[in-house]
Length: 231
Image 1 (cartoon, rainbow, N blue to C red):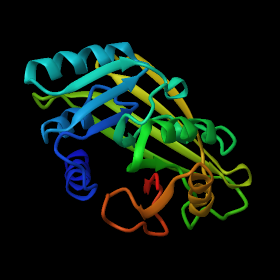
Image 2 (spheres, helix red, strand yellow):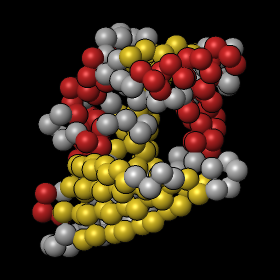
Image 3 (tube, rainbow, N blue to C red):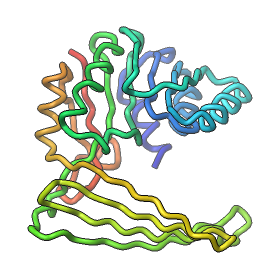
Image 4 (tube, rainbow, N blue to C red):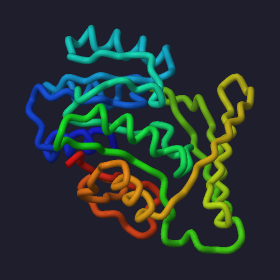
């Protein structure tokens, strides 16, 4: 999924080859490195220092124009420095509509005029209308590069329509047989609420896509990308 998204961003954002891009929640540089190979200058921020250490070592090894900083999206202090900002796989899906404006305001200041924001936000799919909570379950077996199964991942997602939230529970069984549990809570909003919020924060929505950039959102998609611009 990453390569097609980066290809679309590089081909459709209309950025010069030396454009400065801010990658918020960059992790180990999955998007940043790929964008840098296309001659963009990328600043990646994250609060997980081990990710940043790995990303910087890899960028230096490959000679990529990437700089990584330990910084929270709540503490952005950039001003008109970037032609584009990416907010992909960050913590925005853990924030309420009351919490998002302060983050978007900092992003607005970070952007130069008439430049782009690409953000994936949680929204309500069309089938999110039942009065009672619903549960989905999944099971995955993750293999090592040598083919041996190293992790078993069991996931349960519970949707709560009354409060517009999804709670996920992951149970991971590693090769040593020790179970580990992780819980995540997501806020879900109708797309019009999200685009109206962007407009109030000074960002004009150009298009709303589903999980694949360039393909319009389907009613049942559970992930959306919003392509917006600071006018």
